[in-house]
Length: 94
Image 1 (cartoon, rainbow, N blue to C red):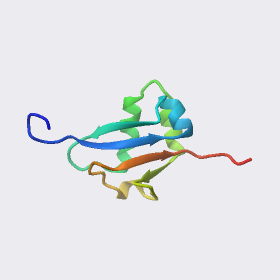
Image 2: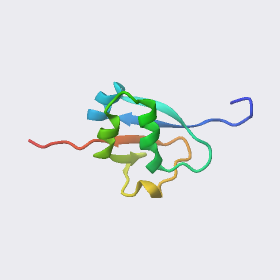
Image 3: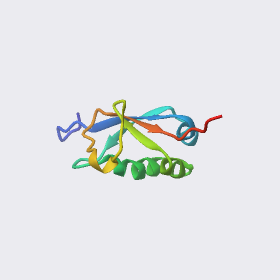
């Protein structure tokens, strides 16, 4: 707990395929800002954490999963902390 008595709200972000390559990570725990924080804002937060990567471009074509459920409307999902968010990159068939 911090000195103010508030526990930081954290989420776990899982990176697969191109997102993993861009960040050089398979996962990371991220503190999310206090107040309302929607999944739609996560892209900007992740890009700010990985500024010298092509993560922004990867995220443009990716989808989100929250706690193993695919998300159709990121604006409708408010993150409260404790969620597991996966970046689902497009895959090419062959």
